[in-house]
Length: 121
Image (cartoon, rainbow, N blue to C red; front, side, top):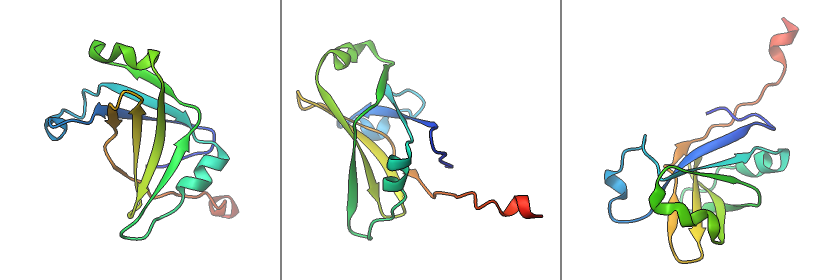
C-alpha cells in the first residue's frame, strides 16, 4: 500500500470475538478513517524488531457504522491506536470503555518515497 502525506486512510474494523476468524473481510462492523499527517507518517515509517511492536495513538479519526448492532459505539467513549509489528505490518485497534474491542486486519505496509528521480530524465 502506498501512503501519501495529507491523504486519508480508511480501514475496516471487526468486533474482536471468537468468530473473528470466520468473518467476511468485505463485511466489516465499521470503518475507521484518519488523515496521514506528516507527523503520523513519520511514526508509521518504522519497522519494529521481530519480537516487538509499536503502538501509536490516534487523536483524530472518524468512524462509519455498517452494523446497527453497534449503533451505541458512536455515543460512548472510545480510543484508537495503530499497531505496527515486524514486516512492517499495520493494524488498528479501537477500544471501547465498556471493554469491547474492534480490530482491523493486518496489512503489509512498505512505505514508498518519491525522490524526484523521474523528473531528471
